[in-house]
Amino acid sequence: MINNNKVLQNFYTSLELKGYKGKIVSAEHIPDLRKDVQKHREQNLLDPEFYEEYKSYFEFEPEVDFPEIKSLFIISLPQPQFEAIFHWNNKKISLLIPPTYLYGRKVIDHMIEFLNEILEPEGYNVAYAMLPQKTLAVRSELAEYGRNNITYVSGMGSFHRLTTLYSDFPIEQDNWQELRMMDMCKECSACTDKCPTGAIPTDRFLLRVERCLTYHNEHPPETPFPDWIDPAWHNCLVGCLHCQKVCPANKKVMNWTEKGPEFSEEETKLILDGVSFDDLHKETKEKIEKYDLVNYFEVLPRNLTPFLKI
Ligand code: B12
Ligand code: SF4
Ligand code: SF4
Image (cartoon, rainbow, N blue to C red; front, side, top):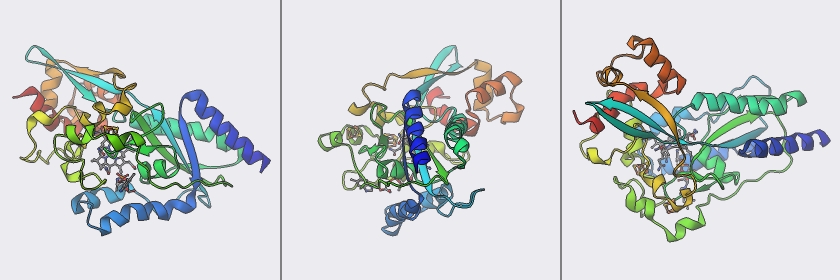
């Protein structure tokens, strides 16, 4: 028990030193997380195609290398947006990449290492968890929902990345809150008004995923954008920032932009032509790898087209 208090203290102090925020809840809540999502499926509020596609993102009966999962650690790390540049017809086309798209794998590895450094010396194990992280963040009181269905962490706005880790660390005190929307949203509808597709509903809270631009521009490259999407609505290389940009809770973070990759005319042409990653020049491959953009490389030809107007 004394040792466990030491671990907890070390966890919260380390978070503070790094500028992260985090919470711990009992792993007994894994079925509750499942219920939170399933409930909406049963009420036919989740698009069936979306549900089929995304259910593999969650493991509600996880298997790990240690005997028992006792706790869930959820950690939030501040994240900037990035500016990618494409040279095209002697023009410089600047496109934003919202927070959490770049360096995804690096953040996960870093989080595993961060927690391992705290727990391993005390004999506890850590493993990467695949759970509905927004729900968990709000249930654990780490975050609150915005009306736009994105989570907000105090001091970070929506510019943060969530990582969840399983552990066999036993927790004494548990904290499981009701799902909560920010107070600020009660008097605001800026995101609903700004969303070009009507994905943020006025008659319910749950996002109409099938209307969200992000859902369509993250889809595999062979899926063209549906006809109802006006090309003028696209605003990012991948993802969409309309509902985060307009949000007053993001005032302090909204201009946090870091330099992303820059592609020459020749590289842009190869990307647009759909040349496979392996067939790119070594320097282009290294650039894409450096920014950890490999997972999104295949969606670039389709996503770039509306901006380059060819
Ligand atoms: C599937 C998914 C998507 C799908 C569907 C989004 C969605 N709303 O579900 C698509 C592709 C559209 C998507 C888009 C985006 N995503 Co996404 N996505 C995920 C993923 C894999 C699962 C999310 C999930 O659990 N969906 C299921 C639904 C049912 O859960 P939910 O949205 O939390 O819904 C709950 C609430 O609606 C609540 N609820 C219902 N009624 C009510 C009423 C009230 C009053 C309240 C308060 C709550 C409430 O109950 C639901 C269930 O608990 C997670 C990663 C992960 N493993 O968690 C990332 C994740 C959520 N996405 C992320 C991001 C960054 C985005 C985008 C912002 C990307 C971008 N454009 O820049 C957009 C945001 C779009 C939007 N407005 O929501 C981040 C979130 C970071 C953050 N700050 O919250 C995550 C955590 C990935 C990560 N590790 O960084 N995403
Ligand atoms: S824009 Fe307004 S309603 Fe939407 S999430 Fe931000 S504060 Fe809430
Ligand atoms: S990400 Fe874009 S399309 Fe999706 S809800 Fe927000 S504004 Fe609407």
